[in-house]
Image 1 (cartoon, rainbow, N blue to C red):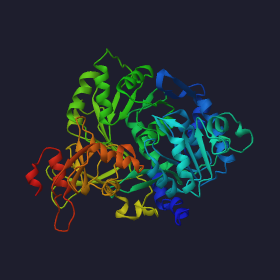
Image 2: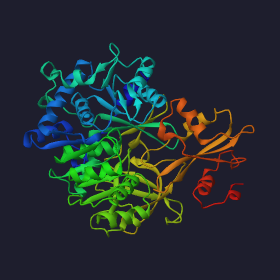
Image 3: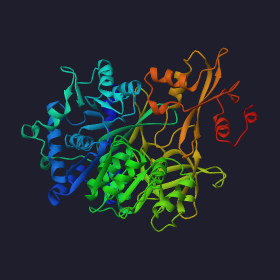
Image 4: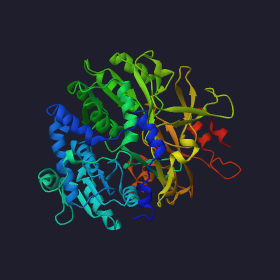
Length: 559
């Protein structure tokens, strides 16, 4: 166990702040278990989860069934020794089991630590060690990768890990088979885990989500059910989401946006969450039609692929009233094509794991307002643009956010260095982005303060650079962001070469993969220079490299 774990995961907001946010209605006395009880009793036969898989598979779970499954899963976790404050980590696809696992942990007041299925051995071992996971639940194989074998390889290096649970085929005597132990054994009859007996603590840390910050080290974001409620309830209210609606994001349920759409908004409103385990434009379009989705939110590239799919066949989406893009700046081409194809405006939503969904363009804005704005803040949020000069599009300000949805704290480094947000700068959170005012109470994103690379997910560039420097043909390296045709920010490795033969992009990618680096961290472009541009202190001038890669500077400007 990390020496400071007990202090880290028991951090709470001050009594004064808690009272203020509760008085304002942003925080509650109850949490997700009470929400589930409400819909179990009011609409037990209504569909809570509509899960779509490959080859046309569809699984529905009603609110009555959902409640029963959560009790059973909570009993299984209790049988495995999970108690209040302990860590349950999981790495699962967008299946209904992931939703039930979130709530089973909540029923026991345990802390859930979701891990994306794209995370590989090197990062997985680090993340599980940092949270000192007691139980790890994973899938056997997914998307051509053996997750169970990866889990087996890291388990011996995790002394705090008591149980490994695998959904699917297991290795006898090594791990617990999820289906038999969680789904088929009536643990709720043996353990006191009934939903009606739950004593909730929505102010306690309930989830640890890892995201890469500007330093390049994975950053743990500590949230409570109340911080998440404050963010998701504002979005639900702004979009008038009710129990009649279906809500959908193709993003992973192990990721912050997936958590909002698969868990928080549906349980707060009684809506139906729609899950899709394998994305393509064609599959997404079919789900929008078949599930009668009302509200969809995703990164711009997903909308781009939907437009392409819709161009191949006639499409009618009468239930769809909101399409929102998030995670990065939205290309104007995508905004215009969504309007032309689906007849509705593409909303721009800005948010991040640390602060939730903070701004969005609204229904009463012009249909193409996203071309000029990334939205006004939701109720409860305060935003600030800071600069020593007047803030303009040419001189944007540093973007700060404050409010009840901002996480309690973040942890960095192998020793989980704790930063309690409300103990710094009066609770203002520095987002690391630059923005200008849009003239109507909202903001327009203009770029990043530091050399962050990525869209919905940040790439830990320091880590990637460090491993690339171990390649025998690499003399020097800088990993810098560039934008592809969809407007997504990807990683380019700019290198200088040791010796006569330059490595290829494929060779560098294989070098990183061989050391367990996660696939979406890998550079997708390679450029070679005689030397990297540096300032007087020896730091690489990445702003020059970024301008060159994105076509706004020539190579001679790098000298």
